[in-house]
Amino acid sequence: IILSTLPRGSCCTMALPPMEADFVELYYFKKLKQTDIANLFSVSQPTVCYRLLRATARIQFLLQMPQVDETALLNDLEILLPANRKCL
Figure 1 (cartoon, rainbow, N blue to C red):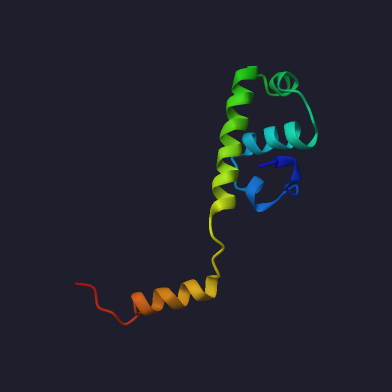
Figure 2: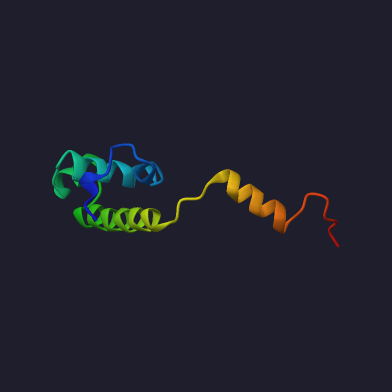
């Protein structure tokens, strides 16, 4: 996956924790070095590397998830769990 091809502010980057989203923005879109990002956030370069790896894994997971139509999902749930069904 090439993160720099994703649109900025896409659902994938918005689903990341704020610091990881910042790291992705700065590293992949603004082309800052990991050491520069580390200095900006007062963390070590290995921390930046680790967070970028985690962010990449999260984004890959999100991109592999199937698209779900909310209306179809609600209809399927209604069939499986009718509203008038009594709980035991």
